[in-house]
Length: 197
Image (cartoon, rainbow, N blue to C red; front, side, top):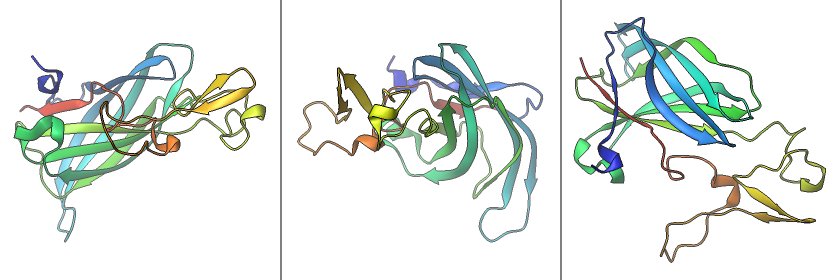
């Protein structure tokens, strides 16, 4: 079975249960993100009438660097993505995560959407991996940085090189190194879920 077919099952009716929506490893730490969906409301609105009240939890499992939740950005429906061609409209849940941040939970988040979540609705959790604090890592002053972000740079003695990624065999230019550490275009992670009622 291809990894694209493996999905976390999430039941919006299980209101008091933490359900997994993301698993990944950044900065050497394996962590997972969970959701609780507490309430669903329909509010008369021109743009985003379906509102879900949700809690988000990040659990660090292994690794020396603490990862933390910075914020839940927004949620959008988008057309088919390459890995999930046969799935139709995909709900994208976008979450900012930051290293060296002790923040395990974001509670009572109002998630507003154009459409109601439906049975067998597929969603992808997109992590926006934020840079460490400037006092630890300053990409403009690598010599003074206490920490070198392995997703954008690596040390070679007294020199520093930039990390850049592109698909194997591609003729495209290498992307800007500052954009190489995030998903969804980066690493293969457990980030797909399916809502099952």
